[in-house]
Image (cartoon, protein in one colour):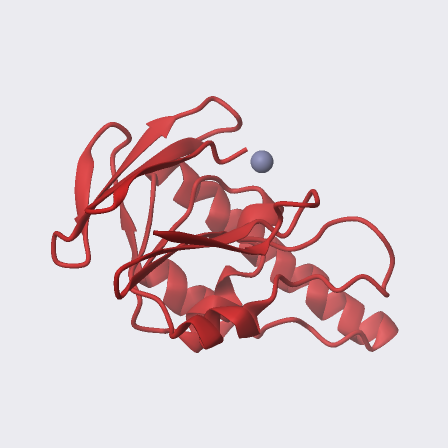
Length: 175
Ligand SMILES: [Zn+2]
């Protein structure tokens, strides 16, 4: 098993990890870097995800922007990859991503700052998201891996995540 920290790890913000087990790759969260000025690169190293050879599933622990803010770009690159999260994370995700679109549109009009993504990947990603009940074990990759979300109390809907694989178990707190 390899775990690639595409963002986050040595910083606060931009959380984005890829768990690689055999030929399978699972993305856990994909957020933006928060704070700082216009010079800050907002995005995790999404090129790295391409270089790793793509994704089989996307799991979202909670709806903070530093964990979901770059998901629409991942969805643009991998539109067929299923996304899983809890219902109570999906609900604020809808609101926050709609709000991000509004803010990016405003910054484009006022400061000519180019938006990170257009509206259509947000709509299509939310439509494809599969809701999982915290505590339920669910299959990924045709049953090669099992995942379990457990409520962590960090924010509404927030979950920690356990991945059970042929090469052992990995646990993400979420935050
Ligand atoms: Zn958080």
